[in-house]
Length: 450
Image 1 (cartoon, one colour):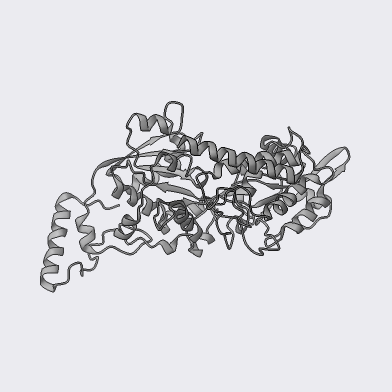
Image 2 (image 1 turned 45 degrees about the horizontal axis):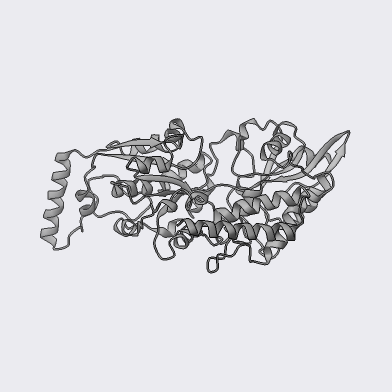
């Protein structure tokens, strides 16, 4: 990549200034020098803009809020790309670890220029520490085109701020397909799953696939509770933002009854051990006794040494053809950043057509609406060759649930309630009522601490 020297920058500035003086129209010159567009995927900057921004050397410090993400992960996922694009920047990465958690860093006065935060952590690991800062000025300054980004991921930002403010932009999306073991479908003569199904059809397939054959218990379906509740297509919210009351939407009962119903199929029941994610992964991957596996993301596909495929997450008949909610990973520029302009350049680059296309080919969910980027999804992933790749990205995301700084309380209480239902400890009405009461107590306790 061409890197301007100081002399080249000065000459370029003089040329632009001379052109502006002669024409009376500053910035009217074309990009005749062949320099690369500074903002890939956004409106091309004028010559005046390019000439006025010299590559300023700086150290950009990153911090992310997920466990088990070491330096090698950062380099492979972001660092190597960014070092090539911005050789004048030094990248410092702080992994989440004992002694380097966010409170530790803030207490030590550590500067953080970029925070890598999933939507589910935005309150508890970002806004709780009052690190949010509106980047609308940078969006305007750099003529960044928000219409390129999947709209519900921007809508969530508006909800978070309670205004028009935007704290960050998404850089990737998580997946939520249904995986299925074709051999089990073949064994019992059940048609494969397909895109565009409704949940009732999947339930009927799971019922037919739950059998005991030759002493082996086959399970029709196991599902990840957290994935389903956070991505629920009915956009059910944990907390009413006006009243801070929990689970007030009457549809919660029907949704919970239906989803827990998979574990009421005779032979598909779970107990305190088999409800755990680790046990479900073992049944799916090692034992190969699960027909349909509802799990987040794209987990460990290289080790699936059997004939499998996937289908798009089904919709509900009352919300036909509506996919799951988007749960993006965001790049946030916190209040304590000392290099906001450079941090925003990084966001621009990571959301450019160039980078999103590259990462899409590698199997990362794109945040762009550009269909050309969607078309190349997972093209370079050997483990997905011949699979139904279209199942990974929905044609239409569900509207986002109401976001609240108390959502985490509702999420935790609901998951506990769901597990008490599927293990037969409580009925749906009791479990949801108690979950609501406990969530509201959590909220009151949190208010007293504020």
